[in-house]
Amino acid sequence: MTSSYDVIVLGVGGMGSAACQQLAGRGARVLGLEQFDLVHDRGSSHGETRIIRQAYFEHSDYVPLLLRTYELWAQLEQATDRALFDQVGLVMSGRPDGETIVGAKTSARLHHLEVEELTASAANSRWPAFAFPDEHTVVFEPLAGMLRVEACVQAHLDQAIAHGATIQANERVLSWTSTGNSVSVRTDLGEYTAGNLVVTGGPWASGCLHDLGLPLKVLRKFVGWFPIRQGPYSADQGMPTYFFELPDGTFYGFPSIDGQTVKMAEHSGGQPVDDPTHVDCSLQDFDLPRLSSFLQGHLPGLSPTLAKHSVCQYTLTPDQHFIVDTHPHWPNVVLAAGFSGHGFKFAPVIGEALADLACNRSTQLPIGFLSVGRFGRS
Image (cartoon, rainbow, N blue to C red; front, top):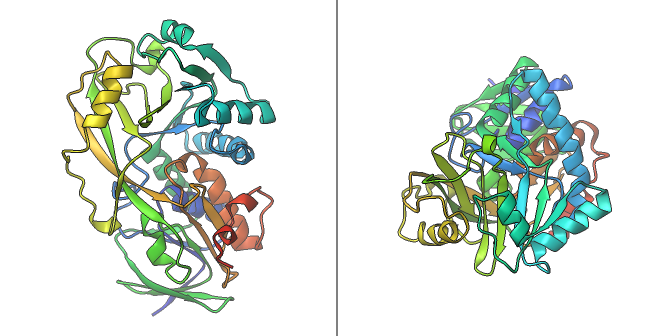
């Protein structure tokens, strides 16, 4: 027997859970399908925390979406009565002519955002947990902070279910087809039909959208937690989130949540993934040296001895900007992919855009620069 819905969502991680919440909140009959457990650690939306910020150095076109996503995170916190966003600020450290500093200052200027520029010496005095290079400029964004990533996904799912969505875990999608007016989805457990399909496959997006041949590359990313030896590394001691652009790479991290360890990772680098279902999550010989070198040079109060680790996956586009669009061949299929390691903070507004496209075939949100057509898929 085939079950029928208004919209089926493939993959209910960060973006898919938000799409389910938005769609169900509008009264749509929604089915969310997830191949693993809900709020799992196999993809890109896990590991305790994600940075959220507005002075976006990657491109100023993201800022209007960020202003909207801030509103939607606040609404989700209020609706679920749970804390999802810690406004601890963000320090960005880099050469004054580097991508990070120039881009953050440009976005702040164009969109009238609150940021503060400091010399390395002034920043070292203000945040003694860090060691900023003398040649660096430091930009502090006070409205930035960190999102509790698993709690965010769970909150979106809880709200979707509260509005009537059906969310099914441990069910793998085998194929889907569209006529332009309806879709059929076949899984390892059954078959479903709907008027519309939303594809939010994360690292599995290429497989879910194989007909498009999207130019996506998946990278294995190592994340480490390191013990505090001495120093003010907790948020309640004034420690912000941080991002360093250095000659050998870009690194980021968070204030301590448990008072004992600090989470950090390298945003650059990573190892290519052939099969996102079977990523090696064990500690590899190449995982630690670069992170250990970074922390010894720039967070001297931490021990380079690893306390625990995690592995996540980046799904990169060639220009490292997202893809959020309607399928070029099927108007009732919408997709979000290629979040390139900086997408989670946008989950609520991406969910809103996907719901607009699925329900209305258009959106007022400024996502034109994220079109799939820029890669010749039209």
